[in-house]
Length: 297
Image (cartoon, rainbow, N blue to C red; front, side, top):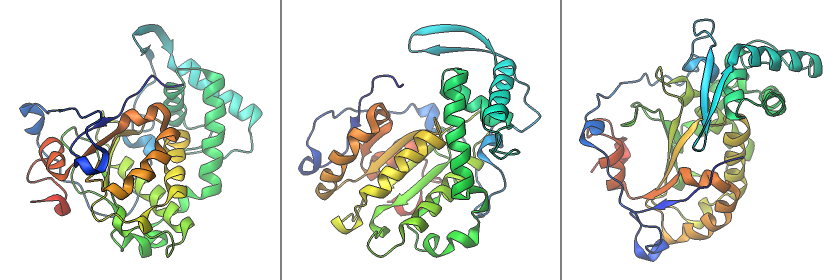
């Protein structure tokens, strides 16, 4: 399903994870000098992820040339494949909803075709599961009011600015997550709401978001394996290829057992994970003006 992967680990104190895999990664000055884009801080959902980078009805489907690993694959007729998937969904899964993010949503179908390397059968299988989940979870019904209680704790939010690569930024403050005191279903709703919100901020031509897990102050009572499993499944099954990178910032020693349990579930997606410190975050991913307030010097 996925290419071989590796985990880049840097910036950790030796007492946490040692030096295994330590690698220096730098960012060019030109990347750091990109102009920051100020984004609205509204908690509402002004758009849907399927239309954020390709407005519905405005971007024509076309022949697409893509690659798998180092091998180039001949151009495919995207329009033909989208229609084929749409027809199969209508014939075999007519009970699925239609409309935006439904079984007749061209943008959504094309995205899942890309994720499944343009295999119609594989795309249909994954789309059926994703559309059904969206309906049962009530994604379209999530509102500012429905997540307000947990949102106001500050445990997670979408940052006002894009990162240095022009990606929306989702920040999770692990020390404010208390699975023993907070309802798990409410945590899941907040998670999905913020993913949708971040995807709605995708600039034209961008397709992925950056997630920052702030582990400063993390204690054993903040650990939540069930929620991490939910988060992994959500990105793999329902928001494929939307996660550009995950930064675990200043991971303490007590986080090591959690990581050892979670890492096998990630499989090749572990290549998206990077351990770093706050200084690395500030220097390589943001400018002085755009870094999240909690990470300023």
